[in-house]
Image 1 (cartoon, helix red, strand yellow):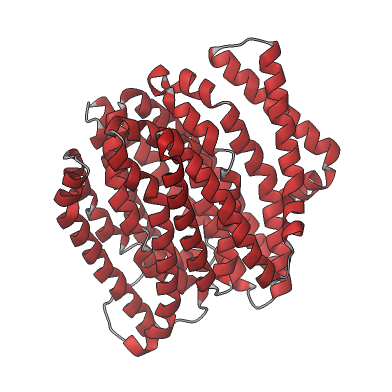
Image 2 (cartoon, one colour):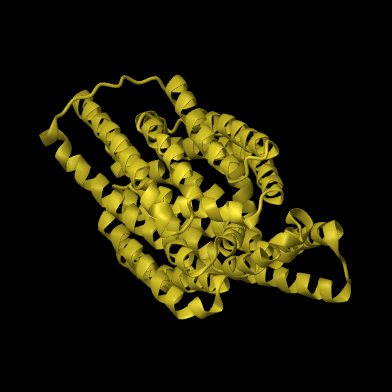
Length: 477
């Protein structure tokens, strides 16, 4: 069972990694190109609209997909009932967003957001048909199929967004790209994994399963509310252009996390669900996962922090220079946010949805308190608020992990420390290089990337040989 699980997960890692490399080359190129074409106010409009979108999508159809993945045997009658819930929720979310759009746009004094919200409300109707096929493919560990869907969506979305931007549609190009992404996923998922859709109601048989989903949904909603506090409050305190600058900085800083995190959950949640009966095995895989991911995410985020100004000036032009400080500040803490999400996935697989809710509340409350504390600093204060909240939330989560997996907080930090030390050496080396040699433009960016990757790799090879051997072993398998 364990060897089969390893093979399935590693096969999934390879397929998803290959797909993501292709997608990210296209998407990053498209994202940077579109940012160059649009203005801060365009991104500000979309940022305001996304407040509502993020809060409603956080409900995630009561996490019915997680219910299907986690429970081994689900009868056809219960499966049809779960689909019925998805349909009702899709209609309800469509109605809420469509009808509330005028009032929301008026509150934030951004009339353009009304039409954007009303158009994108259609996405909920499409997503209600996606829950079942995506959950079934994840449950069967059919990562190759999931990767194909991501690949097609990853090709059509940037092409459509660029075409819309070239047509001079401004903020509408972002909205159209979002809707096309949802539409392609809908078509591909229901073509590749054809399932029957029948609306039936078997409340008693479904009630116990829905409790887990509702707890997940509450946790997700609270987490997303917390994650949106910077825009909810910032949208009132600052201008649309300022929020647009903050949005672009945040978007670039979060690129690695938003690309890695969903795939990490997609792989790890069904895998940990299959071994959740063996706590020792869960602990062993958890330790290995966070150790390996630490060696990837710390240099990526800290490198992005160091290169933020070069990236903005070289790729996005000087009009977005204010976004660089947002990237520089927040990237210091983002590795801990990704590790936090990994830990939350393990707790969810173990059925501890109550701890997920607690973690979400802690994250939301701490972010709110830090936003109030740092609001005098303008949009930079929003970035500092994120750093404070991420660090404090992660420390508190480690205490819960200690109780569940019998791991000391110290032992978890020992797993992170080699990656942190190697990344610090990389950062210092880049600082010394740039104080010695004055470079500008694309040459500065390329030299720093090559130098950073070389120093980090050499330091890891010399002082952490075991991690190199472990990574090679996993890739061979």
